[in-house]
Image (cartoon, rainbow, N blue to C red; front, side, top):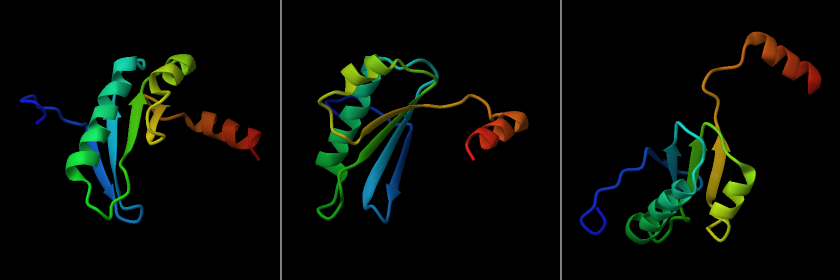
Length: 106
């Protein structure tokens, strides 16, 4: 709870070897700039309220169904390097797609 408002990240993990939290936000649509701000707020909360003295800073991963490279650049510039944005697939590739990929990347 922050300022009487409740917020909830989609997934939170703790990486024992890296000694840091991984906060994952899943979005079912194209990247929007407010998504970066939301994730940045979660990271700052974890830095101030959850991190232990021997922990490393948290890492944020934002997964969207699509994104524009320039929009992501402008929305995340100046944020910590621990904010990552990536695209995910809605379904697994076909067997033929995998075979083609493997043949092209020998």
